[in-house]
Image (cartoon, one colour):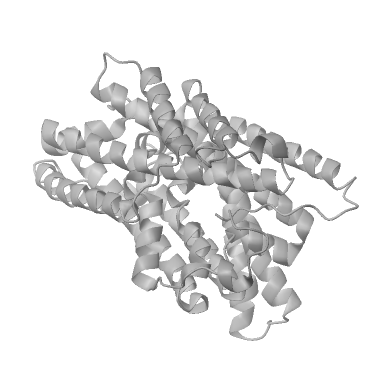
Length: 448
């Protein structure tokens, strides 16, 4: 951690990243193979119309990404949705935005452990899913405690492995699909289906696939000309990632069109890859996916434990527990263990609910960013004429409306749990601020 006596020059980060590097970081964070995490769930829910759901999600995310880009231009610092909300809507609303985001941070390692367990059990049926979940949690938690760091190019290497798999998958899927009757693309998009409400329910779950695009905003203090590059990178990552998800889903439906025949809805990707390339492609997918998941959970558990440590150090959470650093390993051991323990919720939670809970937190935060654009540009700065009316009022309002629609399309259970989490945060905030009469402490949601 940085000593309190450090000067501004000493704590400034090196601005070395340019547009290609920022885009690659965002795509690597999004984990392109994450499309398979919820593929079976959403494709079955929408009766084979997952592409329609992805299009709805992409449109909503592009409006929200545009709002992120506008706020990144106004505040080119790390902190993402929490920083934008706090600087525009005030400390109390900012705290609640950060608290809601914390739900995502805490749940991300858990859902990754869950999908590791699902796919490893599918590949090795003799070993129960619970064993893989506990084993991966112990290994990742142990590495975090010991302080072992991934090499700087890990994200790029994992992205390259996924890219190779996707190319091989595309070639083999097209070859396998050439022997099947070609369905109508129009029918796959807008044909007979379950209706608009279910399409939006599927789109709400698919928000999980887009959680990485806002991570680019965290690079603001390490990017050359951040006001120009970060907004472009946010839009490009969202667009490229969304189109990639749509293409992969299209190929998957072409090679395995019967959405009622999955051997496991949670592991539908294994049916798809088996149909496209037999045992070879199935094994290749499992290896690439598990490697990507392991790298992702190692990074996410490291990140959230550091966030909890920062909150403990600053007195937002109990300092003796979350602010403790092991004298030998120099790591926040209690925070790391607590995050690992939360990951064990994967033993009792299903993938649909876990995905919905993460989407709940993301959509709530995305909604606040859209509101922040209106407050900062349209209301505070008075930019209301001509094209500014569309950019700073109409566009963010559309983004807000789409996010709220998707948010309320989540399952009732996810909504109840998510609202419960927000109410707990509100009660905690009321306690800390003596009934909202004092300014709340700041949540440090950026890596130190």
